[in-house]
Image (cartoon, rainbow, N blue to C red; front, side, top):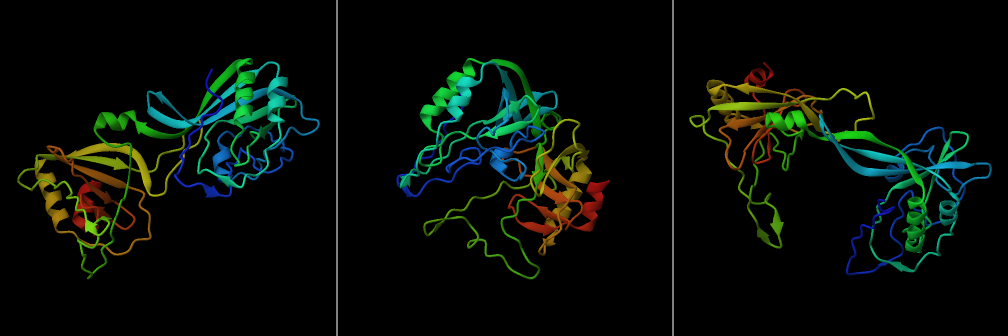
Length: 335
């Protein structure tokens, strides 16, 4: 049986005054009653953005018939690759021991608490009427689960019967198709310093600083026009919604959409155009189509160039600075 809760703590040398912030499914305040809803919404706990999910004690008239344990930080591998998502387990049996543990009171607020964070599964109860409530863990004085109650919850769950287990997809974090093509599963524009038209860039000033000493990290160079033998084009665009689950997207990051190639002559021409690119201006338009150029043969540093085919039409090379992609380069990559 898996642990009911995993204690992941980062303890600082100093003790903070006041308690660490409570997670949405760990209550540091006196608990009110949960509000039953028509569907289990696994994974709401960390987001806390769903106003319909009100966790709390079992309300009068709600008759629990099953426990659903939701692990919102898990992965599953299938033919498409590795998915991040939520695993929901449904348990049946005598719930009295579990309900007694969940009904334990919260401890009084402590004066000082260590900086720590507890990460564990959400607990949901299914009622005889088919509705669901989320129940928080009884908490200690620092809005963390009471360890003695966690042990009781784990023991109670171990005596229940696991009758169903399902995985709810969230996002594809490693695409098998992309890996086979030699591409990353997703791509976005990473720009450390925007270069405005007509403005010089003080490269020494923009280097990362440690104390008062600049620490230069030279980027891997692109091959020369004479050295390149070809180019792999990894394409990225918005993905259609899957039939199962939802897609969790990060602003500016696009999933893998396919791969193409340039021959030696085309690759040399692309590199020449990249070398002619002028500085880019400020950009407020998000691209919906990008391509990452992998010059061949690939070097140990694996230098690449990311190009926006729409949006602001920028390119970012190994130095992580943006430039305006020449129209001729955009046309070459779009074809």
